[in-house]
Structure formats: structure tokens, C-alpha cells
Image (cartoon, rainbow, N blue to C red; front, side, top):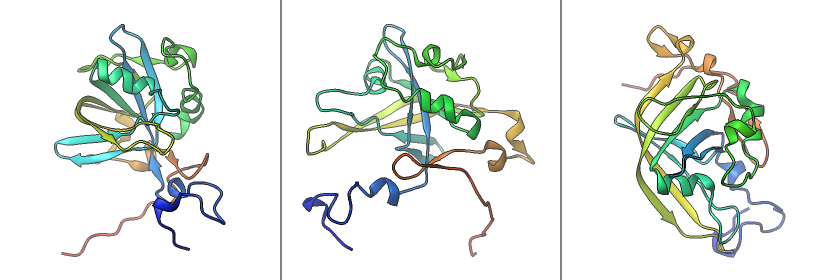
Length: 205
């Protein structure tokens, strides 16, 4: 089938927006942020990825869930333009999912979900202690995208990575062992996937 986006994203026989199922797997950025009053927030985002490796930059999209509202993460980075992108391994699936609950802005998800935190070195928000990799970031730019048809705001946050935490168990022969990281990936709808087969394919000279 083919359809123009301007005509709607759910033409028959589709009953759901197909975009999340087509553009996948997506890594999960478990973003920790902090308000100007010191309230910490922790929330997972699958609209997350690496943008540039050297210097390192990442992006995530804290898009609003309802018209006239914004994500606590977005409010926080507007007040304190720093965040930590914690990388989600299989062992943190349940904790990550628990932190996706829409808690009020004055609730610290670390405390509410029983998730241990560790202080960051270069930014104010803490990191997830159990995460095998974490990227301390400062906000480089926020890009405001067109809203949804019902008025929900969409934003892209680009962060400059200023500090990198890597668990020592991941480093093998000078490289990060992807298998040991065991990253979770977001698929379509409410589905998740794991790394599966890993193989090497060298580029031609």
C-alpha cells in the first residue's frame, strides 16, 4: 500500500500509526533530569539516538502526551539544561518500565520506583546506578517541531556529551562488548527486543 501522510496515518486496513513499527529497533535513552528546585525526574525515551560520535552528541524527543502539557523532562531541561542518558540493559527492563508511569512533577521516579542513583561528575542530574553505560550531557539545542493535529507539542533535544560512564565489565580488548551491554530496543507499539545475533561485515576499501 501507499498513502500520503497529509491524508492521515491510519488509512484502511491500518488501525494504528505504523511509524513506530517501521522505524525500529530504537535504543532507549533513560533520561534523568532535575528541576531548578532540585526535584529529580527519570523517564525512558525511545525517540533517542546518537547524532555525532566525535565530538559526541545525542538526541531525544520529549514529545507531549496531551495538548497543553509538556513532559517533566522537557520542563526540567528548560530550567536546568543538563541531563544524563542512561543506557538500558535487559536487567533494567522492569525498573525502566516502572519509571514510564506519568507521575506528578514533584515526584522523584528514582525514589518512587526504588531505583538506585549515583551522583554524576559533570552535570547536576544523577545517573542510574545499575546502568552499564551513561552519558552526561549539556543541552546544545532544542528544536521545536510542528505539533500533532490535536495540538500536542513535539521537541527534539540535542545534547553534547561531556562525560561518559562505562562499566569495566564491558571493556574487552579496548572495545565495548555489545553482547555484554545486552541493550534493550523498542519496537512497534508496546513491544521490545534484545540484541539477537551479532555479526561483522567489513566495508569495502
